[in-house]
Amino acid sequence: MTWLAAATTGATPGAAGQAIGYPTLFLLVFLGALVPVVPTGALVSSAAVVAFHQTAPLSLLFVFVTASAAAFLGDIALYWLGRRGMKSKNGSRWLEALRSRAPEERLSQAQGKLADHGVAVLVLSRLVPAGRIPVMLACLMAEWPLRRFVRGNLPACLAWAVTYQLIGILGGSLFEEPWEGVLAAVALTVAISAAPTVWKRVRP
Image 1: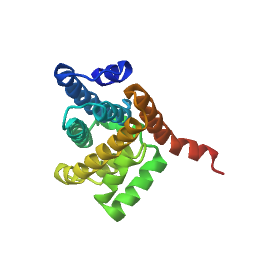
Image 2 (image 1 turned 45 degrees about the vertical axis):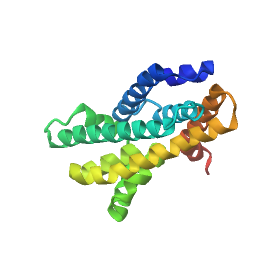
Image 3 (image 1 turned 60 degrees about the vertical axis):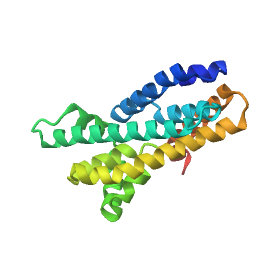
């Protein structure tokens, strides 16, 4: 990936590298929204580190626009596929994949919060590790129309992109070399993602 290669070598990608880097970032974040195994937060933070060290103007803005748009479109595509599965007699593999990633306890909590707070829960779900899928599934089970989901998901994706970009900017500002900032940003995003699981295991 152009961003990581540039960070590892300490080089600043030129126009050709950026032309490859932004579409690659978009594709990976989009796929990560559809198949929640790609560490999209770490990708955005890494791209933000490299953009922070660039002299090209608006690089950070381009990362933000690319990441938020990819996350938004990926979420919409996954929700649309989930709705198709809800209407199908036999369901769909996308719906089953959502259900497999939403433990019953988390799904029950998401349904309760969704009933109490509505669209606001979508914003929080994007910021809480492992919170997006249970809330999306709760929206599907509540039979939210696509339009309503879109209205709530837009600010959610914007807030998500800002959060992980700020992590990348922090990592980039603490170290002179881009690769050091990338390592710091990735370590921080991994720690944030793992925190709920660790807390659940250690609490009495």
